[in-house]
Each structure stands twice: as structure tokens, then as C-alpha cells.
Length: 177
Image 1: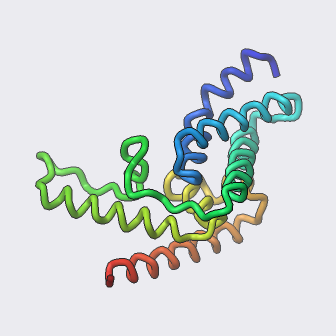
Image 2: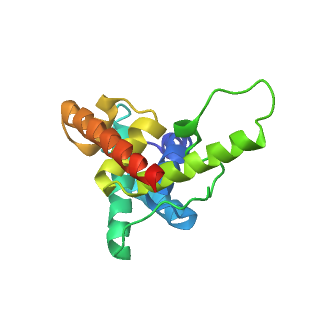
């Protein structure tokens, strides 16, 4: 892989890699560091990278780096109730667009819902959280996720099913309190 090809690879994937790190770490500086470290590793392994699987390789790499970072912190990351980069979970919470500006009541309901979802996702185990992020927020297929986590596609489907069920339970409990 030439330097120009590598730079094109970085341009193509840097936003997704950074977002994935941000979703997992919920810290912009750490996410930037993990994204940069991912591309350093990619440069070091550029002779082994294949165009067909490079995205999965990059996501697996950033995922592992983030998990290592979380272990070093010695605490579980809880997603904050604020958005560091705008509408972080907007895709998950997207509702039908109104023809006019939303009312203050609609904005309040949306913000409260977003806070509940942030808390619920924060309570998922790290491996489950990562897979939910890839599926629901990144829009990746089960096959792509399976390649990243090196598990059978049916196992990924099962994890997503259990994660959604767990999110429903968590959200139900949060709404009752």
C-alpha cells in the first residue's frame, strides 16, 4: 500500500473510527488518541491490509484499544447526558420531522428520552455496548459486525437481540423511577 493509498484509507474511515471510539470512551481527547493509535497500527500493518476487510480490521483495532483504555481507567464508562459532538445518539432517537419547529414540550420530551437512552446504553456491558453501537448507530450489517468481533453472524444477532431486550428492561426501570 502506497502512502497516497493509505492517506485515502484514513480520509475514508477516520470519522467512523473516531465516532466509534467516542461512543465507547465518551471523551473527545481519548477518542482522538485511540483513532490516531488505530491508524498508526494500520500504517505499521499496511502490507497485510486488504481493501475488502480494512474497515472491519480498523473497527476491531479501535475497539480493542478502547477496551484496553477502559481497563486502564479501572472504572466503567457511563455515558454522559450531554452531547460532546452535537447529536451523538440522534440516529437512535430520530423521530419524524415536523413541518415546523418542534414545540418546547416536544423538545423537552426528546431531551428526556435522549437522557434515558444514554443512561440505558451506559449500563450495558462493554462488549454488548460496542455491538449495539455498530448495529444501531453505525448502521453496520450483522456480517460486518461478525467480521469485527470475530464471532459467527448468528452469535452477533443473538447479542443484538439480548442487548435490545436488556435496553428495554433498563429503560422500563428508568421510566418507573
